[in-house]
Amino acid sequence: MKLGLNIDHIATLREARKINDPDPLEAIFVAKNAGASQITIHLREDRRHINDDDVRKIVQSSFLPVNIECACDEKIVEFLCNQKPYKITLVPEKREEITTEGGLDIKKSGLKDIIKEFQKNDIEVAVFIDPNKETTLISKDLGVDGVEFHTGKYANLHLMLYSNLHRTKNCIEEYNFDRKTLKFKLQESVEELHLCTNLAKELSLGVFAGHGLNYNNVEEIVKIKAISELNIGQSIIARSVFVGLKTAISDMVELIK
Ligand code: PXP
Image (cartoon, rainbow, N blue to C red; front, side, top):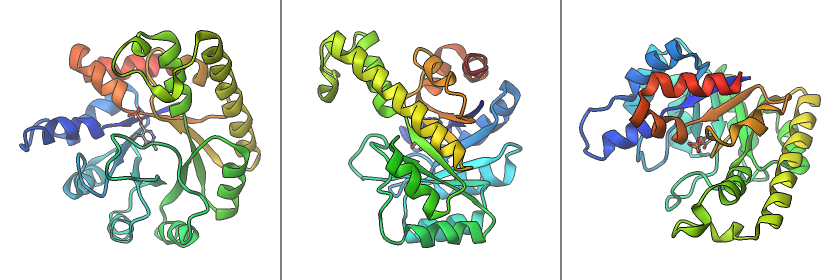
């Protein structure tokens, strides 16, 4: 199983001051030396962290394959077809959201054409989907190369069960259940992931996963053998503030191994 390092939040830190520091470009060299297998960035419509210049520089300079997450926006699709990253992961996007909540609406009209457009430009395409049978089967029909399963539900249930979050103002109301229910739902979410990752593998799709994964919750996900790649960002960049980026990445690479 490989680690795709999402470096968006290095750009988030830069944008806090609107200066050139820290530059996410520097992270791609550290990532390679620390054992990451892929660089992942999200070009959001509002350019709140990664911007067009970052995309150009990172695609041109990276030794590791670059996976760019983006919404189905006509201008972004055109720009990225010209940049030619290794892989595109199509994600849903709402301006007001803090992070990508939920998987892509896989029945969205025009999706097939966007997928074809990228593939015509020799770019692999994955879709970021909620883990269930229907989304997996529809993804196959759309002709994608792979699927990335959204692990946000699993991660939120894990946080609510095993951290102090539920006793703080950041308690996730949607998952505010008693321990017994949380345990049951967590188990259910893991089983869901096992089922649809196996199905995706049987369908000869690339099988990836990500969102909300961290040093405490990744272990259960690593046990899912069908998954070949995890895309992880926030927890690694957060840890890097205290231990440095190289150590934060290699700690995660070790856990994944
Ligand atoms: N995968 C996808 C498709 C995402 O949109 C994100 C968040 O940008 C991630 C993985 C990484 O999530 P996190 O930052 O919570 O690790």
